[in-house]
Picture 1 (cartoon, rainbow, N blue to C red):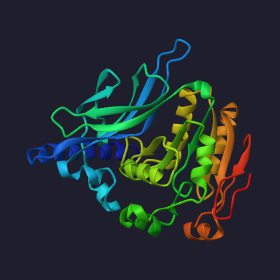
Picture 2 (cartoon, rainbow, N blue to C red):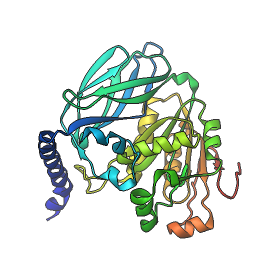
Picture 3 (cartoon, rainbow, N blue to C red):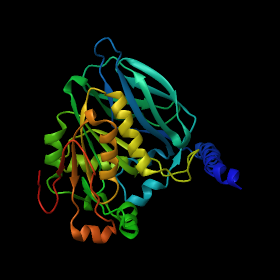
Amino acid sequence: MADHVSRGPTIAASIEARLERRATTVLARRGWRPTPLVFDSYGRAAVDGEPGWVRLLCRVLVMPPTERRSAEGRSRGWRRYLSVSAPDLPVHVHLGDTVHKVRTEPGGYIDVRLPANLPPGRHEVFVDVPGGAEAGRGRIDVIDPAIAHGVVSDIDDTAMVTLLPSPVQAFWNTFVMHEGQRRPVPGMAAFLERESRGFIVYLSTGAWNYAPVIREFLRRHGYPSGALLMTDWGPSAQRWFRSGVEHKRTQLRRLREEFPELRWTLVGDDGQHDPAIYADFAAAFPDAVDTIAIRMLTPAEHLVTGACPSRPTSSPRCCRCPSSRGTTR
């Protein structure tokens, strides 16, 4: 029985992949085409004899040509989750003067590191699928590690008021609410702009389906633009549902490995696990953390979310982020 339980997520992921391939074939006969959606990401400039690289984050969905606007987040929430992904397809990545050939993974995702000799700054990347719809376009911030500092920020209830721990509120915010109705956390855009100094990564447990909406929200409310690191809610080879906490821990450690020279400001809220995740990271890599900044939810927000306030047990330096109760450092 234990073997069946442990193999369950693997079997579910395999079934999901088979269904995706069949759906892709059927829909292709109806004129639907693979459509790449490229997410904002980051890279490292070549320094001290080490080659440069970029991290490509992309997803390929199968859809009618007229539905790109929906997939890019310009529709009501629930439509974004009615999508068919395109696994195991060849994809061309146009980066500067170089074209890289990669294949989509289960779920239609691409998360690869590609060699790139690009100067520091913002660059565009184009992704197309042979025989598919028009190319997708994304932005990549190529970082010179000499900047010595970066920011990792949560999104839900840190940059955007969502109150996600409440199941009813989470359902309404995710599947019903129109994007224009979402509210930013007062003062947070200015706070992140001041702290980022050129490199910011938004780290969220939200699904990739939601990434285009996040990008538009951040732009509309004056947040500094940066990479989005989100997750997939479906089964994997290890779990029935992916762990948001583990996603954040893994991505933080990856950033540490990719940019060992940088010290980070870690920004989150005290509604869920951010204080503990950040404190653990700071304990493991004390030389990598400059500041842990926590937005303190109001008593009313804690009541709605049903979450108990949590605090980092230790850190190099802690402060409070902007909230409706003001800013304290």
